[in-house]
Length: 171
Image 1: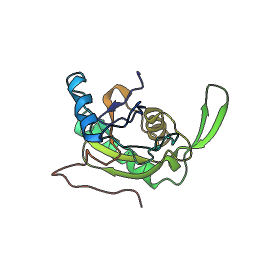
Image 2 (image 1 turned 120 degrees about the vertical axis):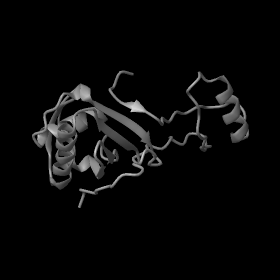
Image 3 (image 1 turned 90 degrees about the horizontal axis):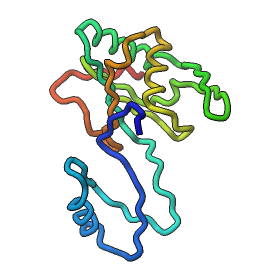
């Protein structure tokens, strides 16, 4: 789907007609997937149990730009983190929704070129790119959205920065 988000981790459900060992299933599936695509793990769920709605996703939002643009990007996310509320009137497919965009972000951690964002989807799922762009615009940051890359780095929190200082503007 063209949703504007790159992903390093996705979940899907598959229902099998017979019980199979998880490791054997994982190996069999990975043998037939296209190059570059692989299954990292499998989880057996009881019949009729809904798959988890993982509210522990981590997104990495990067900006490609000059040093000044990267600094402004980081400062904007720090403003988002320091803001108590970001009222958001959002037109859905069937209605107009009144949301608080700030409540979706449980944790924001930035370095010089990117920010890790931990959204909470327990109240409602919204487009991650729309949420991020609205949050940045609401604190006065107006950069070309084509300079951003938003990556779902997994529910495990992979994609953390290495070898750089980290600031936690979320207090």
